[in-house]
Structures are given as C-alpha cells and as structure tokens.
Image 1 (cartoon, helix red, strand yellow):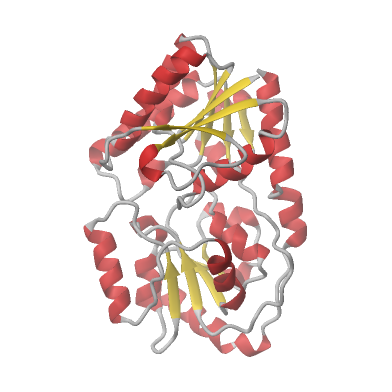
Image 2 (cartoon, rainbow, N blue to C red):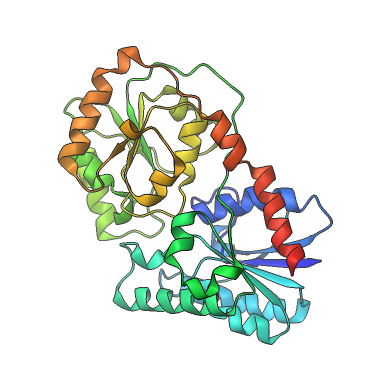
Length: 347
C-alpha cells in the first residue's frame, strides 16, 4: 500500500506539533509493509530522516502563501506517483482533498485543531482555514482527530468517519528529577500560547525560562521577547534533545498557559518527566486528566499569579508525580501507530 503524507514542514529540527506527531508516527509505520512518502518543505530541511522517505518541495517564503504553494507542488508530484492513500495533516492543506480524490486517491485527514482560532491569522486567513476544514471534513474518506473535544466540535453528520487517535509521548529512561528552582514554559511565540499571561503573573525575582521562538517574526513575538528580557526571563530559543531533557529534569514547575491547543506535546512530555504542572483549564488540557489542583482559569492572570506563588512556596514538599500508567495506556506511540494502520486498512 502506497501512502503519501502532506501538510507538515519537515522532521528533525522543526518546532511544531504536526512535525513531532508525524516524525514519531511514520518512523514506526515505515517499518511495516507500507510504502510511505512524506512531503516536506525545503526551507525547513535540516537533515533527512533515516526512517522515512522524504521528498523536499519548494514553497514561497511567506506566512500566508507558504502552505498553499507547497501543496501545489505536492499535488503534481502525487499526480504522477498515484499512491493508494493521501494522508493530509492540518485543515489548511485539506483544501486539496477534492483534487486528490479526483485523481483516484483515498484521502485521510488528521484534524490537528481549529487553526483559525490561533491569534497569528488575520480575517482572510481564518476564513480560508474554515473553508479548508469544511472541505476536508466533507471530502475525506476518513477523519482522525486528537481528542474527544475536537470530535465533538465537528459536524455530527460526519461522525461515522471520525476516529479519535491522540498524540503520544516517549517515556524517558527514568532519571532523578531534580529539585529545580525555575519555572519552565515551552512553545512558539504566538498569542494563543498565553506567554504574556505568564509574564504578567510571574512573581518578582523568580527565575523563569521560556524555550521556543516565532516561526515568522511579528510585532507580537518581538514585544514578547522585549518584555521577557526586561523581566529577566531567559529565552534559550527552540530546544530539543538533551537540552530540552535537562530543562524538564531541572525545573520546579512546568506552566502551559495556552488559550487554544490541539493536544500539546509539551504537556505530555512534562508528564513523562514527572514535572509539577500548572495548566490553563481549556477543554483539551482538562481531557488529559491531571489532578484538579494542576489547573487555573484560562486568561485569569490574578489566579495564575496565586497558583504560581502557591506552587513555589510548596516546592520543599514536592514529590514527583507518576503519570506512566495513563501515558502508556492512552498516549503510547505503538498503540497510536497501530490505530492509524487500522484506519489505512479500512480503506
């Protein structure tokens, strides 16, 4: 069975939920009898994956035209290679679902979240993303969503072709969790991550590290970096590998103040390292099932400040949470890849 995968930017060295999802998923599926080709964007090429065949395509270096230009090249490449299935990741690329069906391919759409709710997009871009969502849901043969929240938000008329398959996480080899002395947050420098709320709630003299960067520089990301520097917050940029592991092991508290998410890998990673966690109470975070004291009201800076102070004062009595059971059962990459394979086989 030939599978073509479109919608992501690349693999290793690229920050983003779709990229992390695909890197872990297709590394496993490529070891089966499936013939998988992933289409990446040349501008994000760091190194080729040793596990998955990747075709690197050009695209326009523009926040609004990058995806559409990449998808045009992907479509024509797929037209001449005729896979059995095209697996689309994201609602923007889903605009092309009817074209893939027109050339005889079955189409699967993984709906990673309502991107039109993200603050970085303007009015016109949000309209296009909403259209992409509607077209993708209508024309895809099967739809994969990351959680029940996403499933419930989609039109019930298509419920019979929707399957819930979440993101996953690798359980690290257990190391002693240090009694850290800093607050940690990770993610893109975009509005919906809520990092401004964290900066406004941060107790004075508290050490804080926000690891990440903006994919495309904007006034918001520049102002965020400026404010963080004024407060003495450390900005190491996008981190991965041992550098990221060190941050998780040494932090005293992991904070994820997002206003909107699909299913954040950073939250699952923090759980895998046994971090104390403070998360906004958006439905996607609540569905993960952390203890109630781990949540604060989304966008409520005062409550966030109170929770930060309370957690920092209790750090001396800290005991490492163990979420291994829930991660192994629900967010296990081997189970996730098997469920995805079952969707392929159903077509």
